[in-house]
Figure 1 (cartoon, rainbow, N blue to C red):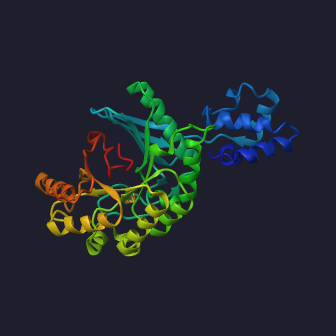
Figure 2 (cartoon, rainbow, N blue to C red):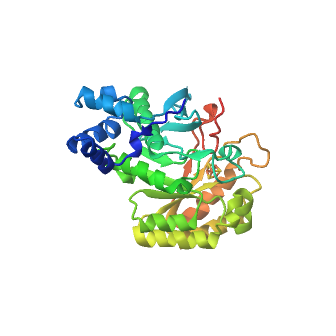
Figure 3 (spheres, rainbow, N blue to C red):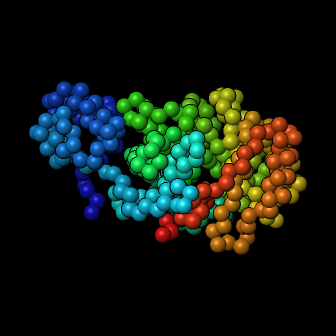
Amino acid sequence: MISEKKDIRALSKEQLRAFFVSIGEKPFRGSQVYEWLWNKSVHTFDEMTNISKEIRQHLEENFVINHIEVDHFQKSEDGTIKNAVKLFDGLVVESVLIPTSSRTTACVSSQVGCSLDCAFCATARLKRMRNLNPDEIFDQVVAIDKESRLYHDRPLSNIVFMGMGEPLMNYNNVLAAIDKITSEDGLGMSPKRITVSTSGIPKMIKKLADDEVKFHLAVSLHSAIQEKREQIMPFAKTFILPDLKEALQYWYQKTKRRITFEYIVWKDINDKWEDIQALIDFAKAVPGKVNLIEYNPIGDDDFRQADPEAIQDYIDALEAERIPVTVRRSRGKDIDAACGQLANKR
Ligand code: SF4
């Protein structure tokens, strides 16, 4: 049952301090409660041991602490962990922990389902139900950090917004969550370790630059040929490549941070020389690096993994043009935790 009481984590620190003043208490009590909520991630008022019993009682009567619950947990043979996370209203999203020798990365969701309709993506088949609140994004990170310490003996080192949803369609909540993740009275993580991955919404990319965000930006490009990109990502009819290029140039001018182009190569879709040439032209116009991602079939015959020779052609051509390129092997395939596979399947 959803509580009628207000979620206390919807209040900013200033609002919490003001609340305490309004009930005749000192404002620093608000800061103490804020720390319990965001730095110590407690789920009950009773755990706030430096707050008097009477005040805790008062909080209990007026607020709830909405929080996620890891409803289902799967561990892959390669160490990848997938959490199906239940939200306060019973909806479910997924988040993934990806361990490598040098880092542990949390891949978090920003929407329940997705607003967009990428043809190759399992999440696109779930309709968008709602945006996640800042605390729901934050909690996914806290849950994965705990699992990282428990199963891999190290804290979480990086976060990518590459789970379910288009983060820039939930702009304010994603930025509010990152603020809590990076602030000293939150998790204190460096924004340099956070990457927001977008399918490429020009207006919102410019807004990120104007808002002087400190995290990294990745763009799912998948084709630098307009007609082809529209087939792969139908919303690209609205967010056309010239506008995307201009927005990315604007981002680079303002932030001086290079963009990562996420790029899947599919057999008979974008594995020809004209595709490589178009990518080179695009990447030359916007300083960045190309991340070639291994494809994970989602039971759809239209999208098939490209031959290794085609991937090698991409690598050779990009390197010849001095465009940095890496190949990302997908992880957690056996538990449907790999890129594009998140679809609340069990
Ligand atoms: S790839 Fe990302 S933006 Fe596209 S439908 Fe899937 S979740 Fe949404």
